[in-house]
Length: 395
Image (cartoon, rainbow, N blue to C red):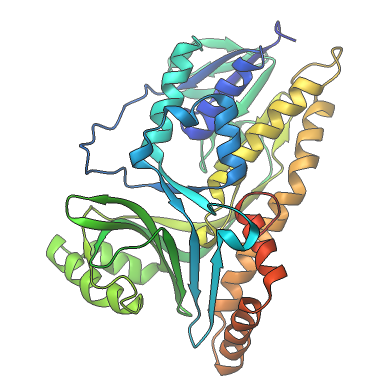
């Protein structure tokens, strides 16, 4: 097993977690990606992209040995969630309803990348600083012309995966016509470790709890909005963006956290629904290279880390006479991952479609549905278990 070589293409969270997990499982692995560049952030500055990690993802990072390396003061536990419809719909989820202390944890992308990179150095995982160019009979040819032999190539190179294209893995992409606008905001009221989400019919606004700063309470905004509205906001100058947050977004959030103000530069990214066949001979995809779902459930990275964990398990458990790149081995990985990925696609896409339907009848159905679910403890326990990664729950 240890004599078979594996090449991980991609230096983000999924790629580094894959390489580290394979190394800890005693595989001969190296990573191909541009050089890692750490974020030089002051104590009250935060990486623009944050993730809501499920209990399953936290447990995986603990097994990799990196969870404890993250600075506790930069991690925020989410103890509850409030969801608001576009009418009188309301649903509240609390960790205690399923005998849990926390629903999920908000962690910066940069903080996870920092500790994963640190662990890769400790375990002496080779990092080839180059770019993927093409596949070869022996493995991979890089942009500089170097050939890297590999029995298995893992594409962890994001939504625009070059590995996926080179391996001719079938890939479908459906644009939503929406963008996700993200930024960190100051709030005039404390978030109390609660995540908030508003379904407004034409948009979804999420405010995720973050560590307090020297300016007071802080939340991370994920605003899923139609493309033209996102483009108009991003085209504004800094002062106009700040005013838009203070007036429009504060009102959209029903002033649940008081008045909101912009504290970081906003970024926007197009929202797409993507799927792929995930494998080809000697090639497997993980994370965004394999699939993307609507961010309203906050499950993208959790799905990706579950890919990584399952692929490593399949490779560890395979019969010794089979190669790590053999199609029969990789088909086991795809088969096990197909159901949870399909379930999450169904949940997130279905919710997006439901709340985007115009008209009073649709609005009545979705708001009444939220109110009914809020009164059903057994359903809420299922949704909370979903947050932990134990089922295909809501978020």
